[in-house]
Image 1 (spheres, each protein chain N blue to C red):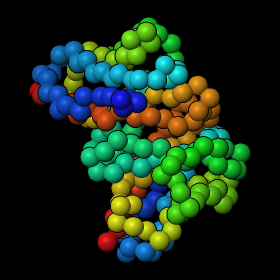
Image 2 (image 1 turned 180 degrees about the vertical axis):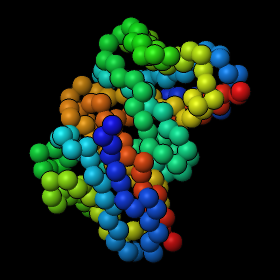
Image 3 (image 1 turned 135 degrees about the horizontal axis):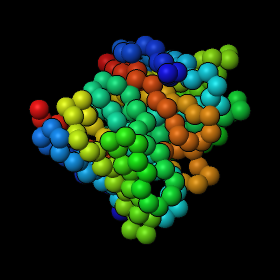
Image 4 (image 1 turned 135 degrees about the vertical axis):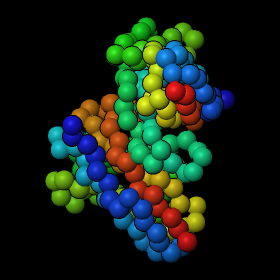
Length: 112
Length: 111
């Protein structure tokens, strides 16, 4: 069964550094998403991406964050100048239509 | 009032029991309802998706939606130890793309 793949599984970065999280969505999907889950908290929506542009974003998704689909298969989340509070699991998801969404296994981001 | 509320548990039941997991929501604009299962160190795995009031069955799983009460449920019949996981409800507004998740209920099925 096709699946969403995310790399790396664990990323350790110094505070203030930039980090790029990578995702390969399911191949025929058109909608792409990033969510995050801080330890012990709910899964929270960050951003959705459709037709090569951001279609929806949350208040969390400020100027520190950006997304890109650099080629036909990858979808990336860039976090500039990371902060301690950015430590979380980051999940990529994709879908053919706005629902239902299929998730990857996440990247655990640790900011030191 | 929180958008989506879900009892975090933990919930522990013996193998073979019927499990009932529930969420309530506050916004009547929510139209699409999903249940995800999340194993430790894994991403949410889609179990059930529905958009209408009533029941939807898939194998041992039944999703139930009551829009008048703003209440959704997931029933697991003949529960197995492999069903031990965290179960997340996720709800979506018509015309929106973001999913709003509940806190998740941690379920343990004891052999």
